[in-house]
Length: 152
Length: 401
Image (cartoon, rainbow over the protein chains, first blue to last red):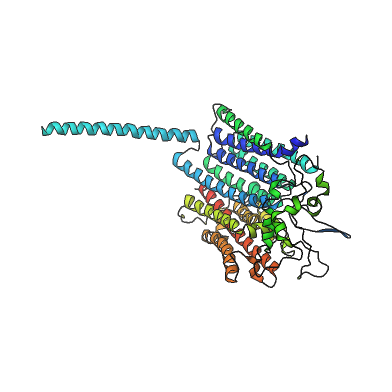
């Protein structure tokens, strides 16, 4: 039982990451994908902070508690993962903001934010270009043939 | 089972449920609101794990700013997700299940939750904490190593971990271990009196700059990892610039004359006007006291930004533009980064290395460290608040097209 509780946090981190990953793969909506990426990130944050915990530890702010003649200090949790994650959270909101700006631009350009529709439109564009190219090529061929006949 | 683990277990269950709801709910509005709930639950999880600074940031950023940004975007791109033909994406499910199983198999080798003997607590971290004090490097101008300090022992941590048994299931050693009684991350050096403290003041461990920087998260953030934090501030600055480049359009005539969306709601107006000064004071408090307690430039900057965003939500962005015109906020995003790197350059001019704050006050290095960290935190705070404001302005500008 203690063993299961000992790694329970790591299982939840895996679960959160996988929920995020599932969202990124399965949901074609770009906003959903941006949110799912955020879930993926918080999974990793949980992994880091879980590692920082020490049995009976307290927040890593150095203080001496004095009870009469006795002085108590710590033990403290590890502050390093806290530092890494605190900056990572602020960077993650910046990433989200840039993603949202790009999504707005995509909406402006395509009129939709569903990844599969965007893909279909790109594909249709490509097909249209290809067919147009074929037609132009055929016309060019016909023209050169015509010109050749003229010269002869 | 102790209280931390019990609360942790329950909170993480709730977090998982809300994560699934965020992904599966069809309305994007509900999804955005649920991310706010999710972030607040996450903040509680961080508090439960004694990670106060992270909880602070999560509550301000995740619960506040990112929800507003998402909703601001939804107004523009539509609030409903296209209905899917199949509810369950089977290949994705199989792929994530396999990846998750592999990762869970990997966690079996992880140290148990809360194990003080885990390698992460013994490799490098004691050295980093020592380095923030400065006496490992014996840099001139910093305090000398206290009597009885063995740098080699501090560096390798051998003296403190040699009694850990090889068998990880044997936990009896912890009861008698010095790790338990002295505090894991406090070095075995005698406490000393702060020369500048009033009589009867506490004795301090040497890690906290003679009592000037008790929050070790801030001292790691601004001193040992000072370069890293500086460039993270630059990343945020870059995000602000990207938003301007991606979304800003030439101003139309008369953009300042538009009415306020919620300005006729008397209660909202009065409550907003009453609460904004307190939000601003709280933001400045969090930035200024970052080295004493939880908080710092990142958290305080976001809180300052929320005051401006609240004003814009109630009285309209034109009103906000009269207080903070876009050119001013644009310039201030850069000024914050400049304050940060300028503090580093000032340390160089005073004879130290880049970001070697002790040189700001050689008579009392502890004071110098605290001063340098406060300046740096203000730099971070200015950049973060102004970038958040710029991001909000750009995303909101789109909807009122």
